[in-house]
Image (spheres, rainbow, N blue to C red):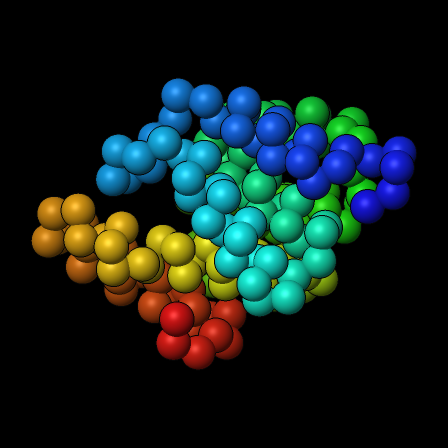
Length: 151
């Protein structure tokens, strides 16, 4: 990312601030999930742009930031495109969502890291049985649609 764009540290600080007070399904601070996904992208060899997209991947979907904010943000266009690709739309079929991810350069790796953290047995273990099972099936299906092997 160039000097005219936000640095990765600035994107992280922005994402942490935007999601302040939000928690995940297990009741943990949402920023923990974002940090895990960004780290998952990094260890999978992802670029700084993919890591930035990881920090922001749920920001619009969770109403932490607006599409208008993203459009005007000092971010490289590929980061904006990945964030938009990773943003689920209400009522959108999962097949359409995953097709958009596959059509957007860099987005599949971010989603792979997201799914890996979401499916982490330690995270799932604190959920009730029916929720854990429902999410496990959902994540496996999304992985299959994206052509990803086991986590």
